[in-house]
Length: 202
Image: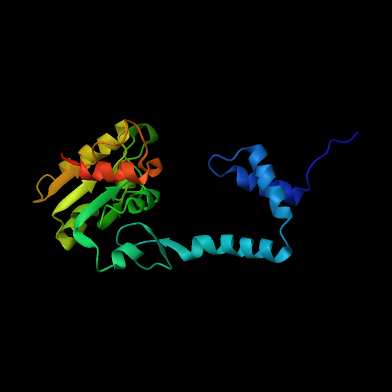
């Protein structure tokens, strides 16, 4: 008796879904089978959204956050934001977590990761070298290093602090509320607000 297999087109969708974080084979199957129940127009619309994603969604030329069509992000375009207060984050996904806290009213600088000798990721691989120039341009008075409190995050924070040691500005790090080794992306709004309000000098 021949082994039952899904049609090849469905298998392709399952394989693509498996590449998403936290999605295993069984979850990918369930999602793909659920999509089969959509009407044709809904599936086409979903496919068109995916095709547009890498074209329309770009990175802000100022801070590195998510933006559209090569333009500045909403935060960099907002005249109400305090440009003298600059928050450095590892990844653009962390901006959404911080914004949900409603505590921070400054602007951001996305590094695109953190220093990691084991993964051969150096300062040249990150958006660090543009930081001093941006600080000068915005006349920043305080830079907040909102980096995850793991070993790599601490090493990145110390590297940036040394890079900016001759600048006339206050350099702080997030403090209480974030457990050791935690990723800021998964912290709740209250925890992030506590960490910002209790930040300390480096």
